[in-house]
Image 1 (tube, one colour):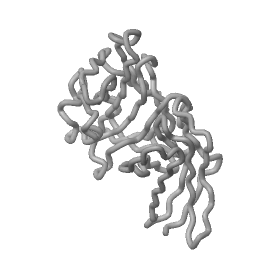
Image 2 (cartoon, helix red, strand yellow):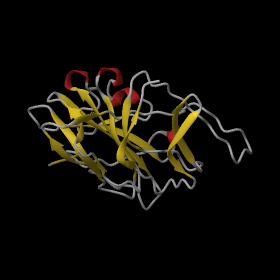
Image 3 (cartoon, one colour):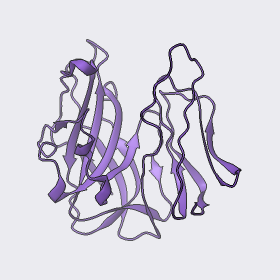
Image 4 (tube, helix red, strand yellow):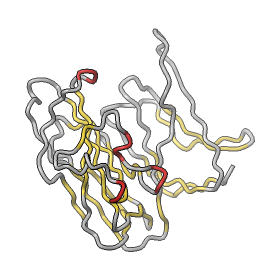
Length: 238
């Protein structure tokens, strides 16, 4: 129903010497809808897979859009998560993609987008050397949309982001916990690590009675999957 791509092809320059061969670029995408709508399915349009490492889609209200992001050439945002919008004001990340992921599809549910919202597309470009130097990209997102849905969906990042792996430890693990103040219904999950990641597990429970929600013993950075439950999982508060 809706296909949004960069207005102009962008050619990464990889000028950040502290992050050699990497460039994070944030672009504004106008959705062109004059009323509130819901995203019921989505998948990125990857124009140059040779250089696209991952894609993040976020939203923000027009009056809070970073002017730098609004430029046709976008804005460098490797150190500026604020460029992805205000997470505390209904904005923030609504989708993420890495190689291997299937389209995200909700059954009777969707992500709310307001008429005055602007999409922010964060592209992570990676240069493999001479074979990718000078390559341009005009990626974007394809969506199915609806005027109304039965359930509204929220995309929320969760995990441990500030740990360090000790030297020579080949089986290091980290755990993050979250106490839910209200009940939620879990529709799916996208486990994400980088190349040192081996496995992951997510559980829910109270009073020592844990139930496995997701487990992968052979994580593959080159084939990351979004797992959508056949039946959404209801989780009580607490």
